[in-house]
Length: 446
Ligand code: 4AD
Ligand code: MG
Image 1 (tube, helix red, strand yellow):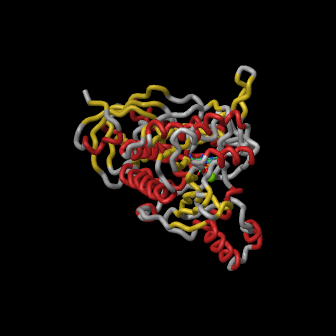
Image 2: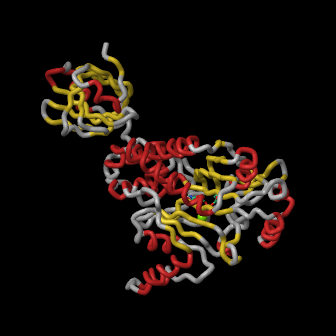
Image 3: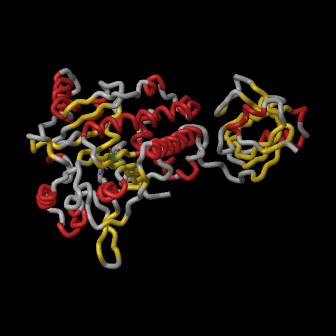
C-alpha cells in the first residue's frame, strides 16, 4: 500500500507511489486528461488523471468532481518544473482516486474575484484560499521566530492577565467588562505587569491578544490584535533600539528562509526584505517633522497636503507614517515624541520634559508603525504626578507605584503588533487578512 504523505514533502518521494488526502481546489479537463489541483493543508499539488490509467468510472467521476470535494488520491510522484502548486515542480500521476464527499451545492467561493465583505462573511471558508493560506502560514512563522529569538536571548515568557482593573494606554479605547458587578477592562497592554515581572526575572515578555475599542476604520486597526511585549531591567532607550533591530531582523530572516514559497505566491519583492539588517536609521520626532514639511512643500496633491499638516505635539496619523516611510528602505526608528502625544508612564528626556524617551519603529514602503516602546519612569513621585495629570485612579495603580519604591531601576520595553508586522512582511494592503478571524469596528462574525 502507498504511504500517505504531506504534500510539502512531495519532493522526497519522486518515483514512488504515494497517497494524499485533501480537497479539490481546481479542476480542468482536456480530452484524455483531468488536472486536479489538490490541497491537503500542507500545500497544493497537481494530480493528473490519464484516461488509460484508471477505470472509466473513476475517470468520469474526476471530470465532474466539484471544487472543495474531499478526496483521497494515490499515484506516482514525478518531477516536472512546469507543474503548478505550492511548492510546485512536482505532480502525481494518478492511479487511484476516491471521493470522500462530493459537494451537493456549489462552493460559495469560486476562483474568480469576490468583494471583500463577501469574503469576510465567509472567512471560515476563505482561509482555504491560496493567498490566505500563504499569509497565515507566514504569520505562524513570525510567531515562532518571535518566541525563538526572545527565548534564546534570556527573555522569560510570563503571560499577563486579560481582565485588568487599570488602563495602560489611555482611557478612550477601553472595552469594559462587567466583573460580578464591578467594572474591569480587557487588556490594552500587558506592559504594566511586565514591569513588575522584570524585578523578578530581569528580562520578560508577554504574548497574547490585546484589545482596543478603536473606532477607526483603517487598514492598520483591529479591535483584537496580538502583541508581543518584551521588557528589560537596566535598559535605556539606546539599548532598546539595538534589541528591537536585532529582533525584527531575525524575524524577517526566518520568514525569508522558511516561507519562500508563500512569499513568491503573494508576489512579495523579497529583495526589499533582504535589506532588513541592523542598524536601522534613527531620526528624532523633530527631524521627522522637518522631513514631513519638506514632503508637503513638494507636493501637488492638495488633499494629501492638508492631511499631512502637523504641529509640534501631535502624534502621527496614518498619512504621516505612510509618506515618511515611503522614503526609507529599512524600518526606521522615530524617537523622542512629545510627552503629551504619548502614554503616562514614559521617562522624560533629560533637560527636555516636554519630550519623552519614547521610540516607535516604522516599517518602510509606507507601512508605518509596527512597534511602540519607551524607557519607563523610574521615580515614584514623578510617576504619581503623571497618574494624576492623566486623571487615572490612583488606587488602581498602587501596585504599579510600589515597583518604584522597592529597588527601582531604569527599564524599557516595547510592544510589537503581530498583524501589522505580518502585513508589512507579506506586502499586502490591509491587516485584516493576517489574522484568522479579524475583529473590527463592524465585524465580529464569523
Ligand atoms: O504603541 P502601542 O499602543 O504600545 C503599547 O501598547 C505599549 N504598552 C507597548 C509596550 O511598550 N509594551 O502598541 C504597540 C503596537 C503598535 O506599534 C502596533 O503594532 C500594535 O501594537 N497595535 C495595533 N495593531 C492592530 N490594531 C490596533 N488597533 C493596534 N494598536 C496597536
Ligand atoms: Mg503606538
